[in-house]
Structures are given as structure tokens and as C-alpha cells.
Image (cartoon, rainbow, N blue to C red; front, side, top):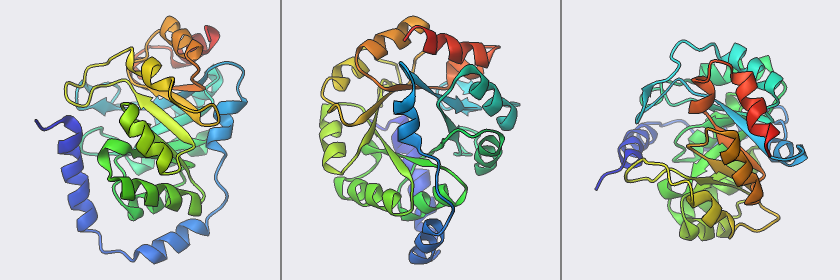
Length: 259
């Protein structure tokens, strides 16, 4: 049964196959850029649970969320509410995001920024750094073990943090074997796209203490944030509930207050 992720990956792998840029030249350009802001350290430096606040216009499952948002204005609002980092969707076709959103959001604040997209090859990692991202998302379910290992290493080579997203204990083992030191547990089921609120707590128990841990997807309330803090997570990544809240700064502050 094809999942949302499967359909998205077909498009991104086709685009990668059609990209004939010189990868070694891209790597050299990315590595030569200015130093990235310290993404993982920002999550560990906070008292209590850190919030990665997401600039998100739409999603395949929910459709339009905040199509007219101003990424710079929203980034500044998130920062005022106490967000530790930003996540910015750059996928155009499925999430209505763009690299321009990331550039604008990062320029508006001093927070580290994650490029949230479907990374399938070296050029994607380099593009993340070249557009100014401080961290790149690597989805374990989207990559072979070899690809994941290579892309984690490449991210480090060009100065990016790699947030490796997993959905279960098996993927966590693959992520750790690939050298991941920053792991996100996505509570959303890949087949149904429904949120399993117990998933992060269960998988989180297997994450080593020295690995920075992030709970992702479906986090809406202060009580849920507190539960994840109690489960040992360093941070939560929240998008939909923030962009639809009406007061994103207060929503970020509320998530942090109960942790």
C-alpha cells in the first residue's frame, strides 16, 4: 500500500535523477559557506523542553493551513514566544513551501533553522546549506541504511546538523548505526497518516541519553508537551497547531511553560 511518503518520494527522486549538477562542486561550495548556527546545542541549552517552531503553509493531509503567512514575521513571532529553533518547509508541491521562505525566516531572527524537506541525495544536503539552513532533515524511512550513513556524514562535512527522523525502534537502530546524534521521533503513522500519541514515548525510551531527542507531529497542548518532557525528550517540533493558533507567540510560550 502506497503511503503519503511513498508518493512524495517518487517526485523527489525523479527530480534528483534529473539534477545533473556537479556534486563535488556543490559540496565544495556548501563547505566554504559561513558557519552555521548551532542547532542541536540550542535545543540542549534551554531550561525544560525546547520548541522547534515550524513555518508551515499547508500539508498533504490537512490542505491549506496558513497560505498567506509572512515567514519573516512568523519567525520573529516564534522567537518572541521563546522558540529555540525554527523549522521551515521548503517543499513546494506537497507543502506549498519554498527555499525563499527559509531565507526570509532565517534573516528575521538569530535562531538556528532546519530545512524541512525530503532529502534523497547529496545535492539536497548541499542545497540546504547553500540556502542558509543550519540543519537538514533526513527521514530514515525514505533512505537506505547506506544512504542515511552517507548523508549524515555529508551533513557534518558541510557544517550542518542532521535531524534523523524515525518512526519505530528498528529505524532508530539504523539511525544510531548511521551516526545520528540528533534524532526525531515522528508520531504520525506512515500508512494512515494518523497520529499515535504513544509512539514517541515508546521509541524515546530507546534513545541514548547523549543523543539529542525531538518529538514530532500532532503536538497541540501544554499537557502533551509536559508528557513528552517527562518522557525525556529535549525538544518538540510543532507546526500545524502554531500556525493555526491565532497567537503563535503565546502558543509557543504555553508549550514551554508546562515542561
